[in-house]
Image (cartoon, rainbow, N blue to C red; front, side, top):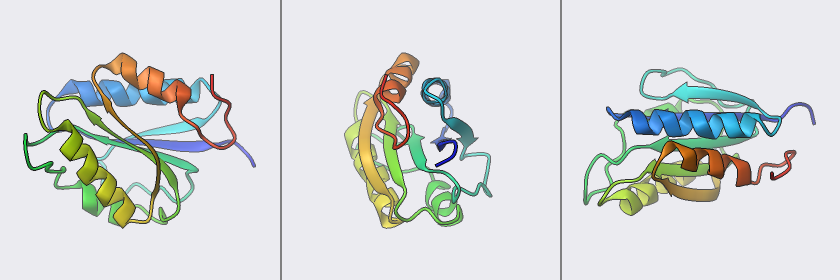
Length: 144
């Protein structure tokens, strides 16, 4: 297998936290030897994820009790190429209330596209993205 390709896709409403977490996650996976594409799903609508070996999808919490996902997320996943069977990680940015429900909805949306969720996390601060990226089990990469 050639270079391992990973896509870190995030959906941000307004907080810088989720983009900082995504950047930290991407940097720590890249440090392990993967080629990483960082994609802002709120701004990019035509990303193709077919060629990636692993996908990390994250979003911020939009509602306290409903677990509302970003409006553009389902369309993004539906139009991102062949992602069924892809190993993946789901993560949400920590919130006082609603993070677990949002994470559950995100995992449902990803599984609905046939993605295989290897791990799911609630990340509180950008450094948590670095830690998660270091211990993420990605075929072809060693865990540091």
